[in-house]
Amino acid sequence: MSRLVLFILLLLFLYGILYYLIRDMVVRRKKLGGELEPEELVQDPYCQTYIPKRTAVKKRIEGKHYYFCNKDCLRKFLEEKKS
Image (cartoon, rainbow, N blue to C red):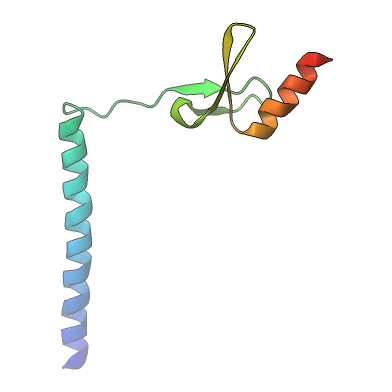
């Protein structure tokens, strides 16, 4: 009997979590006007990887904007550019 009660409580808990996640997705979709916009990717000029533009390390060099995946790639790019 106690196993049945624990099983029912577990199901209610999982239902609550799924309900919260699905409701949150619906709210986000409504905020975006019904469509989820794809995230813009930019290429790191040093390591050639693609990263989301909003999380990239941004640096303006000689009037041009560059986007890097981390500060190490930025540092290495600047060192290479000096040489």
